[in-house]
Amino acid sequence: MYCMRRISAAILFGTLVGGPGVCAIAQNNLNSAHLRRAVSILDSTKEQDGLVGAVRRVRTESAKLDLKDGRSVEGPLELVELTTYGIKGNRIENTSYPINGSMLGKEEYKYDEKGNIIETTLRDERGTILSKEAYDYEFDKIGNWIKMTTSLIVFQNGQVKHEPIEVTYRTLTYYFDDSVARIVDAPVSSSKINADLPVASNPSTLLETINSKNDPAISARPALIAIGPTTAAAARSAGWQPAAVPTAPSTPALVSAIAGLLSPR
Image (cartoon, rainbow, N blue to C red; front, side, top):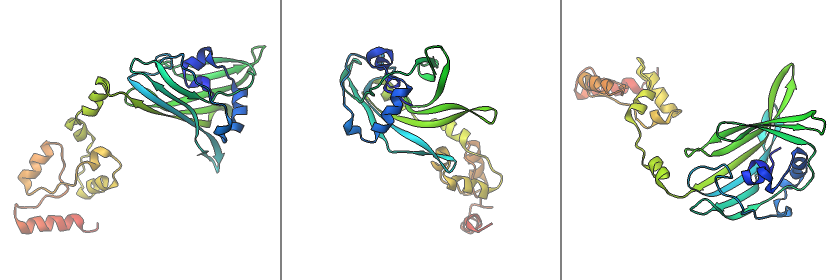
């Protein structure tokens, strides 16, 4: 289960220590967050907490995942930690909900290249493996994770499988510095939009793709009806495939092309 040690390096490296047995106790208490005693932990920085960029605030919430009808169902979110950082990266405010209890064994960690825990192994005092957990992440544009899925590693039908048991979300707020400004002001590359647009010989296929709104790059462009063959050729060279092309640059031909485009196939 997800414990406070996996939220910040300050907790991971000894400010607070917890284990899977501790988390089992915590799950009984997560549904009543107000019953848990809140503590404030300020002797850390955003770097020690594994954060990058001009982070101002991090709100961490978690929820249990239950298997129902063959799919994972997310339970209610519970606040785990709320931290505010100063402009220099030091913690200036923190409210954490630590989990009380005793460790049931020794934990070993595996990390990815960014320093995030990707696997935990719990062993007893003789070194025997008791359980394993794996962690999958989703990241924001700055490079901090915003969603972590905790899975219990199990063995089923002769195969190793990951069984999701908990999901943790982080809502990050940043100071507006140069790195944020570059993201906000970054123009949309026309070549990227053109590369994402399909080229279809059947105009109705292209129109269906546009109307499906599955691709933001496609939905950003309406269906193009060229005035005539010359306009259509210019549009194709720019990467915008016309959905309909009149046979001549005249009103009757244009009306006919539109009617053909809208008629059911």
